[in-house]
Length: 321
Image (cartoon, rainbow, N blue to C red):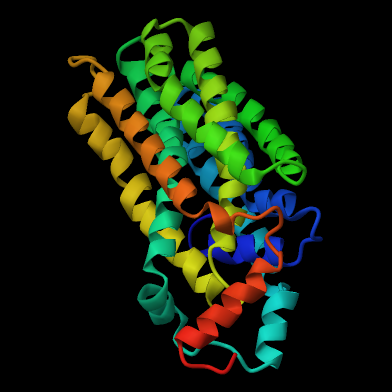
């Protein structure tokens, strides 16, 4: 559930979750990301080991055919999804906002900016590791594609189980504290991450990637979904979360490999320090975003604060409280 379906998947998970399990349920769509990465890496690992003539004649079709099967499964699931209980209640009370996107942008711009900022460090860290740094490993250190895929597979598998654990943990501890801890780790580990990577030692690279993904990625990505949902009342939550997701992709995901390659070419001709500095900068952005909206990140996403947000929204857009 990545891209346009992400916001809906998050809200269906969070709004239908028991009050004591909201962070874990909210992490479910997030867990799909490392799971998909593991599955894709396994497929590509075996495909990359095929003889070149077989790979070019028919082997390259295998990942696409496998992906098509998953699309059909996703379509079946999507067609059977019903509205969440919270949004159903909103419709029954007649408080549905007619133009939710405009309402969010007009009345809650600071929350949208905060939602975008929350995802800064986790997105940049993830794309640096899973795209740019793997290319560097091949170009600079002479790793084969199979080697880089194996490094990624090990790190992504560890990250997958870590995200499940973080989702469970954050229903017992403060999600804000865990998130900020992950952001601080990302900033502190930025330079050691690249220093370990620069050794060219496969074992050290696996350790570096695993530590970054577990303590920097899992701790933030597992809860950023439910934390983003906390920012908006039910009437406009889907639009608010979708806007944050879309703008985050434009601001952080798309430019990361391009900016990284422009600043530090993957041939090793320039020092890597600008990339570590960027990672520190995005960690600062996420920290500020989390700190600025701390009051919204209550223990449960369905707390009484939602009712206060809804009443506040109706007052601002001129509806009866």
